[in-house]
Amino acid sequence: MSFARSEKQQGQRPALIQAMIDAWYQPDLRTRLLFTFAILVLFRFIAHVPVPGVDLAGLQRLFQSNQLLGMLDIFSGGAMRNLSVAAMGVYPYITSSIIFQIMVPVIPRLKELSQEGEAGRRQINKYTHWLTVPVAFFSAYGQLSLLSRLGVLDPLWPALGSSALASLSMVLSMTAGTMLLVWLGELITENGIGNGISLIIFGGIVAGLPQVFGQALFGNNITDMILVAIFGLAVVYFIVVFNEAQRRIPVQYGKNVIQRGRVYRQSGASHIPLRINSAGMIPLIFAFSILMLPPTIASYFQQSSNATVAGVADFFARNLGPTEPFYWIVLFWLVVGFTFFYTIVIFQQQNMAENLQKNGGFIPGIRPGPPTHEYLMRILTRITWGGSIFLGLVAIVPFFALILTGVQASAISSTALLIVVAVVLDTMRQLQSQLLQRQYEGFM
Image (cartoon, rainbow, N blue to C red; front, side, top):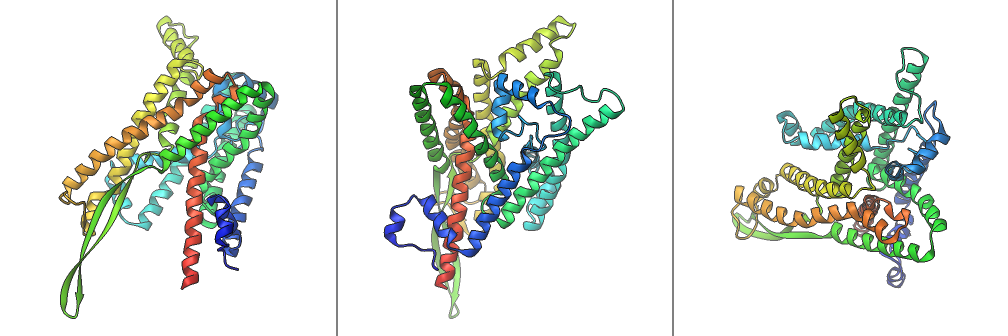
């Protein structure tokens, strides 16, 4: 049966729903969709498997009283609240990926690998997996140490003995959980629909939202909840607009064609799409991760015998919390700075000017080579201002939403909305691409 429905039926449904219906009528795409759904269900089962030796009642009380931990719990889909083996999600892998993206242009060997095509990318991906293991190990240790200091876990490594082995088993369980989720994400990428790692993050966020909204619905009046809904829809709208916005740079291609012994010059037109938000959600993850570090370290020195050290530690512990305006001001500028940094790093790795010159392409009015690179950098810098300020505003929207509405659910990080919308758009594009490919196969 052809996946193409009648024009009248297609016009009555949104594009995403229509794409899902069309994909369902294709046996191979239906298999991919069911496989993706099955892996996400398996991920949710894993997210409810706690690490050994955890006081779940104490954890529940802690997460209800700590706004920052509650916000992080949303990203894990409740896995942190249960201290599951999947509590860290795939974020250690994302951290490792970011580290390698930054190191590629700096380390000559990695730069050579990145230019070797698919084989080089596979090798870099292997290195990324290797780095993920120690990153996950130390992240698990840091997370457990923080919970231990907050009184919901026994002290880690008290002595060499059964307690130390119990601490080691907790750290190793969380590390293994992260690597298992990375493997499941790659299975989705290979055999399902969409980017598997992004869908794992998406699944965790979406799974935690009903509980948050349910608590807010029964704890606030209907007027406040309507304001929150309007606020959320406006944020989603602007996320879609900025995610899809791009500056198209016109490009001309010229090539020589030989026909009957004579050389003819042919040309074609295309464009380079420079996205307003080229960095995606990475600057937000960077900024949140860095802002979590000072108060965590400061908590270790608040009881110091040195008055200066204790005073500095107390300043960071008090002012870098999600209830303080200073926290959101620092977060905004960190996001803006990281957006520029990450965008430029990625642009340098793409070598657009060099690739254009190799393929006989040029921007009208701009000389090939370094002048083209400088021209593209100038445009990219200008449009990145819009993308960076947008991401900075997305990061601090929860603070203003909480002030305007007074509803605790409005403090849900709009970073979560950005991730959800970006993953949905990317998955929809991949699904439509698969459908278009099969339509052309049918014509053949």
